[in-house]
Image (cartoon, rainbow, N blue to C red; front, side):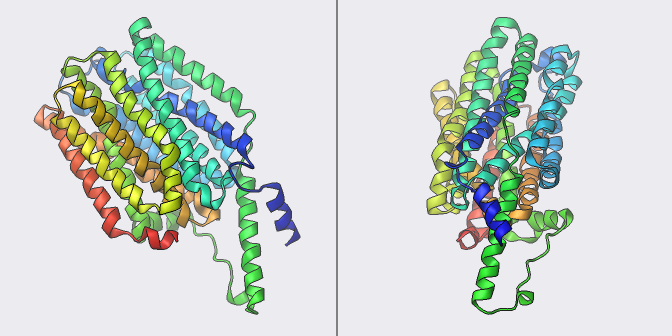
Length: 433
């Protein structure tokens, strides 16, 4: 008991109490966001320079397929590994995996090199972003998890938008290869220097568990219940956790499918929106503004949408977010000018802000502390495998129709149905309370 109280005193949870480390983790995710954002405006619109033929949408989407496949798997690996060796070690591995990305893009003779670069991007993002959000949840108190995730995702996706916008203008000034090389290597170098000051948050997890056990013991003794009758359940293996979270529990599985659906939508924005807008006669800078505006609104709005769900519950913001996202995609498909596309991008960003941090916060609510990393890793596996699923599905739709708009309508329908699944097929409010 004394040992658990000492651990709790040394590693108290709360954003304000741990503001220094919490801010360092936010800085880390900002640079993680820059790394993924730097591709968003530049690579799809310049794919012909790497040998992708016009109309070959499936081959174009392959760079996101490789990213999503690798990131999805490594999200789960990262969660499992971080529970064993610590969050900081996995974060470092993620940054080291990022080093080849700008180098491969700079020297790429064809699109296959871009696919390889995005496999490293998936490795890096799977380890690095997963660890920043997991660490910030570790540092936050239980009633602050939505706020913690909101701050993490806000910081990261503002950086995604700024990265896409900034590299669009740098590519116009210095050429796409040199712009991405300089931008990428500078981002990685700064992040690694700042990582030296980051502390591992696994100690906070152990302190939380010790405090939870102490409370359980006190309640047991107060009710004169023999401890043997109320044992602490053993920690399931990773396979059991994966099956439970993926398929066997209706609430976990509802959250996982929601993660897949929102990444299918993001795949549309990442790969096909730049192509669509280019075909409408827009320049690289204008495309950067539309895709950047979507990510920036998504990011900034999360500063309050996560905290909103801490107060009113997870389900209402999540379901509303899916409906806003579907509406924004549909408006983009209907639209014929930037006057419509800019507001539609903002609607999509707002929808993402409502649903995105609250899906993962809902998962954190119901996952026990000692295997929270595995549960979040499983959710993030399915969520980011959505990139691979989206690349394959939307690539086939666009290629079979030789147009982007049908892929937009398919995405809008899937997103709306996903929101309805969570609305009527889960008991999140009951479990979160």
